[in-house]
Structure formats: structure tokens, C-alpha cells
Length: 185
Image (cartoon, rainbow, N blue to C red; front, side, top):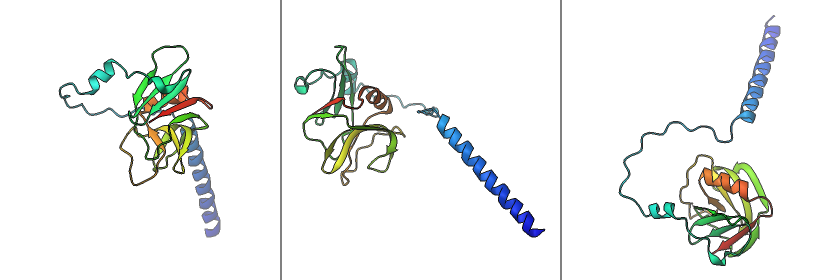
């Protein structure tokens, strides 16, 4: 009898593990792309207006040397991106954290995209839009799943040009395969 009850226990254990695995898969497959964030603690009172206040009022102009037509413009020195469309409407512009490997100035095409992967720095990222290679590292735009934007570790070669999750969503919608990316110094 001991053998048959241990066989039953083993069988039930296998069924239970399979059920938990299936339910876990179902939950991950139906989870929202951006789970709701926990309520943030109250913000500390902000100091006097900073240098960013004028930037918010008037976005930086698209650099004249960035070409024409629909394109992503990335200025390494300004740490800024512009999403410029053909319609002539005001382009979306935002700050980014450059990677440690910088593509040479020039025009590139988006050559691959990934919804979610682990970045070259080992961090889960989303909305990856790749367009170049520099110093043997693939370079592209992305946002961290945890929403953080720390300075990159200068001791490592990384290719992730990081942005906020909201800006990452905009980049993902705008920069499809073969979209033009203009890199400026």
C-alpha cells in the first residue's frame, strides 16, 4: 500500500505543478503592458523653478542639420530625441540618457525591434528600437521596465539609449522597421 500511496502523491504533485504553471502562463499572457503603479508617497515641496521649467514651456527646436521628412533625430551632445513626422505638426521631443557606445553621426534605418528583452546592462527593458552598431555593441532606444533612468555604468559598453516609459511608448509607435534615424554629434 505504501507504494501506491506514494505514487498517488507523486501523481497529484505533478498535476498540481502543471496547473500552477498553466495558471501562471495565463496570468502573464493577459497582464497589461504597463501594470498600475503603487501609490507614490507624497512629493516633497519643490524648490524654486529649475532650469527645466523654460524647456517645458517651449520644446527645443529640431536641429536644422537633421534633414527632412519623417525621422527620429538623436543629438548625442544634447541628450535629446525628436520624433518628426511629415505632417509638419510640432514634433515630440524629450531628454534621453545616452548609452556608453555612441553611433557615428549619420543617417540610419531602424533594423530591428523587440517588445521586451534584457538590456546589455542586465536590466529588463521594453520597446527596444535598434538602428546602429558602435564599438561592437548594438545601439537602440529603449525604456527600463522599472521606469528608472540612471546614468549608465561608464566601465561597461552598453548600447541602450534610455528614455522614460511614456517616451518609450511614443518611440515604439513612431519608429517602425526602416524608419529613418538621424544621429547628430
